[in-house]
Length: 389
Image (cartoon, rainbow, N blue to C red):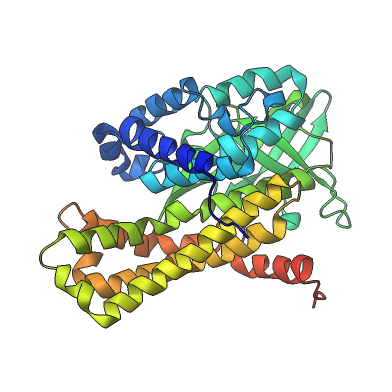
């Protein structure tokens, strides 16, 4: 079995890597990302970079040709996101890879062309409105409701952990349109809510590791043209999008960044070079490298399964569990090598504070995109055929 990338795929990966380092991660953008308010994007330089991505054809690259894209296969899509995240660029995975193509396929024609153009041109970002204070990984229990009023829908409710909503133009919102408690999964509909709608508001949540938001919907009125897919037919759209999101959360390049930077530092700093000869340091590095190699294979297998026409649900869930827990383990393994000073903040700290930020952010990956406990259940029941219990 050949598990190596083809020469064409390797060349594509290098092309993306060069583009990200030379065109995207410029000094002014790196400085902007260091500002907590713009750490995920949304600053003036970010929107300049987004428009450049659109002009250079990168956002549309992953989209099917029939939807106006370049028709890249799933492996190329994975490599694009992987290299972008490895460079430190806040790649718009939701708009470009998971929500955008689903919206383009299922949106109503009255709004499809305009909003697809906004996404592809880097002029719009779509945030996800799924989780609620009383409905997290169990999305079928969500309470935000949408009620029909003539040609409009009136939405009331609250969402939480709506990351990037503070600079998004639209919220990809899951709402209950059938109040029958027996129709938990079959009573949900997806809407695209413009963030300039009357009755919509957003507040920031500053967690230990990431900046996120709560969004509120008080009698938000939107036309039926902003409904995506069939009424009460939102569940397949939600689950299909989540499979792609889970892969992007733990892409190899994103998780490997700390290992890459640690090894580069050890080889280049005179005070630390000797530590490379210590057996326990070699063990930590070898263990990290081996597990990262396993993650890379899991990511590529998931992309391959999708390329073959499968949903990739089980593979995405398994990869998400392994990758998110490896993210935390890497923090421990590399911190042991770099010593307590590595957990300081600021440009003067070891790795310019990367380790400290890694420590604060790590746990988020274990529940973002669906808690790992739920992902294990998906693997057990859908993947291994075990009974629910």
